[in-house]
Length: 119
Image (cartoon, rainbow, N blue to C red):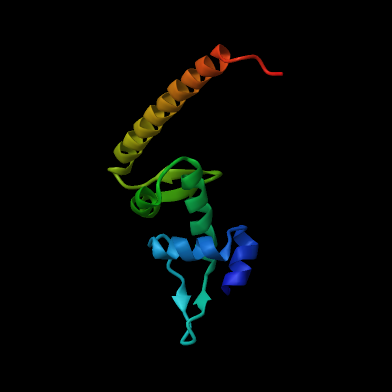
């Protein structure tokens, strides 16, 4: 399928599909004319990329994780031995980022509360 059909099937813009390709996450075949041609497996790959991005992983991490996950019903399951350890590190990074954001939110709440009331 061409890029327009891929956009329709995945809901991902042409620009993002090209970005995923530039990041090494997606590798469509190319016609002699330069047009990209995607297969059914690419639809699943885009779905996995979107799920991993929604989980807070960077595209660099997804590039390492993507070859090591398989569909397990509605979720993804690891198949490489080292993947779980890497995902635990990513989860720790996200936990720290959440904590930092909560601290920032609390500080803003204090500043707002100390200011004049809304009028």
